View 1 (cartoon, rainbow, N blue to C red):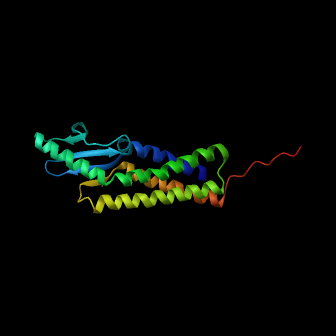
View 2: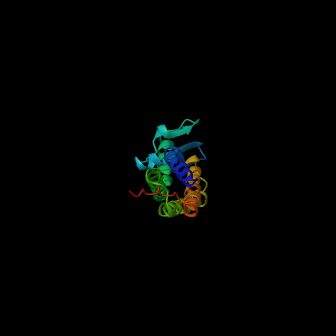
View 3: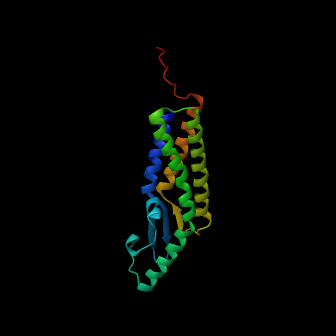
Length: 172
């Protein structure tokens, strides 16, 4: 059961990397921008084709919006990079547990990865909700980071309570 939870948490982490992690919204004119972890890693810079808007923008408005978006996205950059470190660790634990079994050592690593994912999620979510003046909000990718935390914590606890048994070696 622990192996399955860790694997599901790792899959949720991979999915969160490609789904919108952060939404940026401007009120006047009404413009929205969604950014995934993949866009951050590949180099995020807001461009006109990333915006969702129904309003027609003047070149001055467009330049101001691009500058505002890049400034807001840059503020969250460190937290975004940090949030995927526990995801990478949980993916590694999931792969190792599928190949070699899930023991207490890997259970502790999964538990730590899940706890770190929860900690980093709370820090980034706090930064998005309190320090962005309502311009930044969490996307579906942020919600999946909670699934990573749950999979890591629960899978790690299951592994600590009941680790996989090693096959008995046959004496010849």
